[in-house]
Length: 422
Image (tube, rainbow, N blue to C red; front, side, top):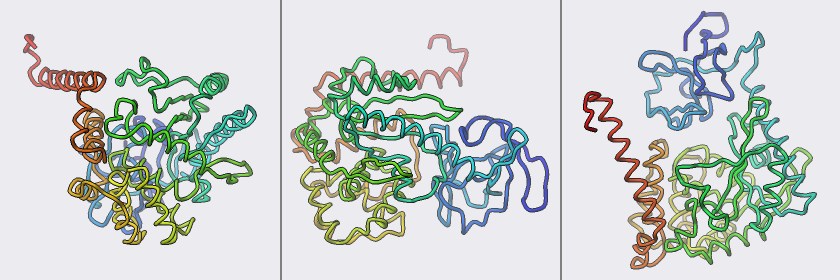
C-alpha cells in the first residue's frame, strides 16, 4: 500500500496493493484514510496500520484498550496482536474506476447480492416443499440487528433433511452452484450418509456466495459417525429433529424465512462458537444481540440450561457463555451457570479462559479442535480412548503426521537448499 496525498478532511489517500481484502477492497483501489480515535475503534472497522515495511489495510477482529488484532478478509490467518499506536487511520471511503463509495455503500451492494441469492434458493425450497432452517448468516443479522452488516458475510448455514438432498443438489446445480471439495479431508470419498454437511459456491458480480448445507448441527467434525465414541449419534439425531421442531417463521425484508426459536438458537450459536475453538469475537457479539433483542429472562436461561443438559453438551457450551460475559457487555445470571451439569471442571475452566483473539494454523487448528472435543466430551472416560481404534481416525492421524513431516522438510529445504539428500 502506498500513501499518495494529504488532503483536507482526511489524513491521506492510500493506493491498495494486493487482494487480501477482497471482495470489499480491490487491487488499485484508492482508500480515503481518516483519523482513528483509539477509544472509538470497534470490531469490523477497516484500519490502516504500520507493518514491517509498509502500510497495511485490514479489518479489526478484536480490540481493547491495550492491543488490537486485524485480519485480511480473504486471508486464512490474522496478523497477530499489535499496539493500538500502530494504527494510523481508518478507511471510510474508496475510489474505484473514478467513482467514490462509502464503505456502507459497498457493504450494502455485497449484502444485497448475497440476500437476493439466498431468497432464490429458499423460494425454490418452498415451491418444492423442502423443509429447511437458517442456522446463521446474513438473514439472521438482518433480523436481529436490522441494519446492513458492516462486514462481509461469506456463507449462509442452512439445515436440511438428508432425504431431500438429491432435490436440493439439483436446485443448486440449476442456479449455477458447484460443490466445494476440501481434498485435505477427502470429502469426495466420504459417503453422503456419513457427512454432516456439504457446501456449494458461485461468484455473482464479483461477490463469492457460499451455502453450507447441514444434515445435522455442525459442532463436531466433518464425519460425525467417526466421533460417535465422543458424542452419541442417537443424541445428535434427536437434536437434529428437535431443531426442526423448534423453528419459527420470521419476516425479513418482506420475505418469510425459518429460523430457530431463541432458546435453541442460543444453544446452537454457543455450540458453533465451540466448533471454532472459542475464537473470533464477532460470533460472541452476535450472540449478545440475540440475547438483547429476545430479552432473555432468568426463566428462559434456565430453559436453555435444560436443553443443554438434556443433550449433554454442557462441557462444550459452558466456556462459550463464560467468554460471552467476559468479552461483551452482556450479563448472564449465575444461576444459569450453576445449573449446567459439567463433568470435567478443570478442562472446562481452562477453555473458559481462552484468548479469543489468538490464531492458529489450519493444520494445527484441526488437531486442536479434535483435542478440545476429546477433552470436553461427556462420554465416560474409559470409553473415550476407543476413538483411536477407529480405522478412519487412524487414517486421519497418519495424514496429519505426514503433512507435518512434509511441512518440516519444506522449511529445512528453504534454510538449507543444498541438502539434496532431503
